[in-house]
Length: 365
Image (cartoon, rainbow, N blue to C red; front, side, top):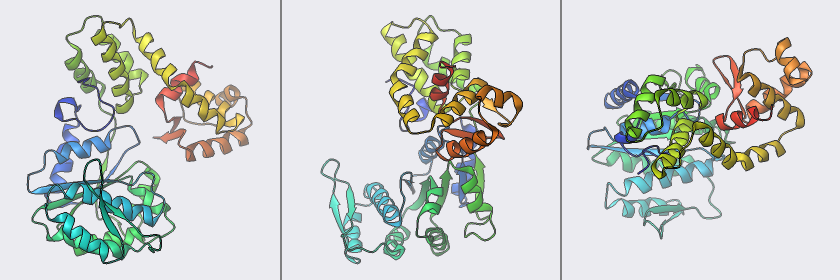
């Protein structure tokens, strides 16, 4: 298998570093300290959680629920139930029968996926979303002989639902079922900070905070070298360059190395420039589609940010001159692009969120 995977978790052999973070998260779970884990996207928080899941004692039952893309209480109930049922069904052979009884209590039904046989919740058209529907499910978890670890990814999405009661409901379940361990992870720093540091919110200072940052260049260089030692034509300076080109982001490094490895294995590798161009060409349609979704001024601003790679003060004379835009237009466009996640503000610096998009924009300057 290509050792540089870009989707999912594939075991310790293909997982780079995160030794200290793994120890910290594992200790928190074993000692029943809820965790809120924050990082920008594409750094590897989901893989870290699944990596730690693999190190839990056999008496633990880890459940991973991804809320990305959910926008309502109905979505939340479906995601919560289906992820829990799909994973717990493998732990408890009688669980499907328990699920059927639970679903019927509020007029829903459980069907089995024809592909993998996993249980799936089906809500009736006249079902009115109620968090109380999930109470029975939580009780089933609490009655199990195993210790549940519930990881809820992109947790900040619940703050965008029209129904504002989800935060309080989850907090109440933590009190009602204290033996269930929780990880709350998210990629929108401001929202996550507000949820866990605002004294008026249900989760105020009840969790162990963890901030996931970039893997060190030295660690990633060692990881990459360990998987390509059988190939000639690639030296340490090349690895250093590709990590910098990917700005140290785990996902983009993995993607670059995945393409690189495929060429090395096939004997078609010529240079890093070849890999860079192949990646940009394969993503070009996506990059151009982004242009159609924003204004001309916003596109100009993205190119100006790409020119500097990162910008501390968007209203500085140097940046205003490079962008060719009025200061007020720069400010409005920046706010809009931050909301659209095309720009990222990290440690006080503005940069293009998608690294490959940034490298494409650089070719247009």
